[in-house]
Length: 121
Image 1 (spheres, helix red, strand yellow):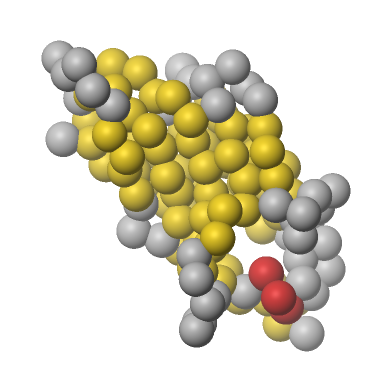
Image 2: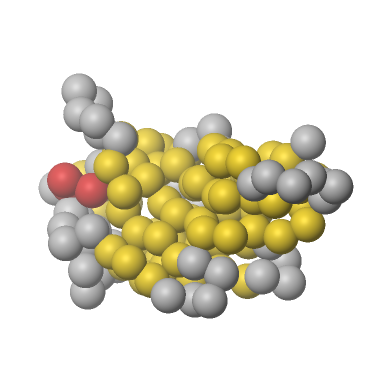
């Protein structure tokens, strides 16, 4: 059993900052790619940023230069530092990880429960 638990969401004024965390726990052998997605009301879920096991990162154009994704492999934890937040960043943010469970030949996609980020104008 693998669980992803996000934390760090909240309400912030435009121009402010938040840092999201996602801790993976359970019977984990290794974690491949990890990423942050978000879903605003009435919109599809979209990729915000991702990082693979080698540390290579990818960002959506809308967050480049403002958000930074990072991971601590020793702690199985993913982070998203969000600066210069805008009202259009308001969404539920979800953590995603491609995990190889202990004793498994295959990796599986896991999701966190989501954390709300609200940016007021």
